Image (cartoon, rainbow, N blue to C red; front, side, top):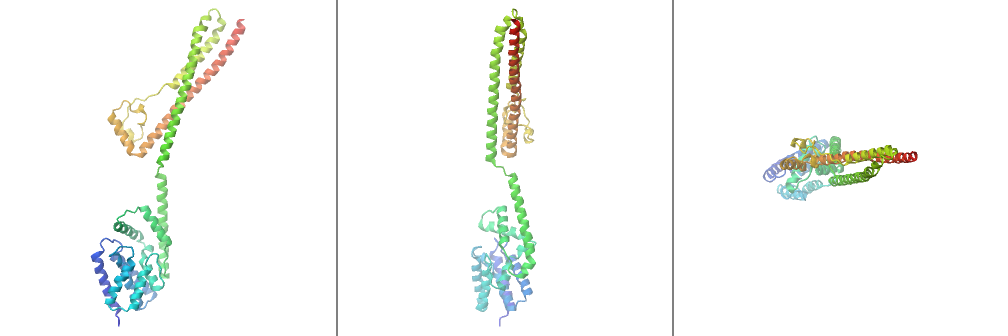
Length: 383
């Protein structure tokens, strides 16, 4: 007659000695996890009032179910666990039908789990008891650490979190006992992970900069601003050239005739005033505005200086400029801040130029019209 309690004591001693010698690299699938699975199995065994034989079968399976990790890792560990269990149980003269049931229980824990009876369902649920436990996070971290160590491969937190979410979504407890006790907490663990993953994704979207798109935007904007600045300078040069010619003609031709043709005095003055004012505004539009050429290194980190514009550093030493640029290039926020400030400064300069040019063209147009009308009236009255 088989005394199940004595064999279970031998199984426990064998498993403990086995793990103590060879399981150092497994921080999760070790003796602690095995003990927790055994405790969960016995808890459900009491609930379902299993016979002494059935309790022996499922408890022994719980002791051996992960032993195959030690002599070959995670891949196919269930089959190696079965072999180790069979070798030990045969030495203890356990009947083959019971050994076969123990083997089937161990094999049913292979993912995805596929239990076919109550004993197998109990072991499957006990093996993943932590999914519905309060210490789920701690156990998940241990599994994560173990996989990274044994596979010698880094797995990012985000990837691991999504893998765990998928596991929780696809997993189902098989016994009514586990469903009633663990399902609610398992769903809470799942929702917490989903919320955490969504928060991480939202944060990633907020902080992640589409660098190529940003650089293209700055490049195109700067190029457009430069083109508009060149256009403004060309328009100012046209006004200066045309009005210089007009002013030359007024000085060389009209002023000499004023002694004899006094009726042309007012039109001539109007024309000269409009020409001079136009030239003044055109010159103002093209006069460059240059800062003092010095900057403080502290202002770089405070984002109060734009080192991309020569006017802010042309009087500073090269060492200060180099240090400031090194700080900028190491900090994308500083760099993009300077580029933004540079584009803004270009826009302010362009706005000033085009406002002055608008005044210049308006004065030129109105002055020319008024002067022509005045000359026409003067000519008519002079006759």
